[in-house]
Length: 115
Length: 112
View (spheres, each protein chain N blue to C red):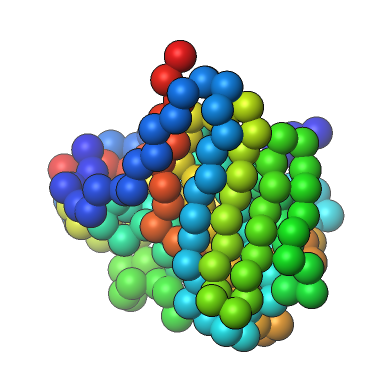
């Protein structure tokens, strides 16, 4: 079984450039989550979707961040323009429900470096 | 690379010994808890979970203990192996309508 798939695995870009991160959740999962992980702040929830609809985006740091889920098998997280402080590992996770009875399964992450 | 930040608590154990990793959770309304293992360069991986109507749950070589009175969660790993070396996170659900809240993590280092 393929787990959560993320691409690219590594991204190096320059400040001011647009960055798009991609995620394919596990087939049949209704929930999709985007997290950011840094040494300073640990794992932070940015946004999550239920049945392709954004439910809670209160964790999105600012308007430079946006996320979409055009269908059940694909989601993107976009940063425009990117800044050095956005450097982190970004994880996508999916679950059958919102964690009460089903756990979240994480992808391998995208390591973003903004120079 | 990543900026300098807080150092993770580290637990160093000898191969073959038992390991106990502790976690204090914050929300008394949390009723579902998960332990994740994160190896270097990988995403968090589910290990074991427990609901608040239980105080102990066992898996293969792992046991999770829940003490709701003091809001404490622990993960016990029996006969620790080098492959167990990783960062371990506890997570709580913040109540039935909550999102998962992750702890800062504990780094487990297994000495051969």
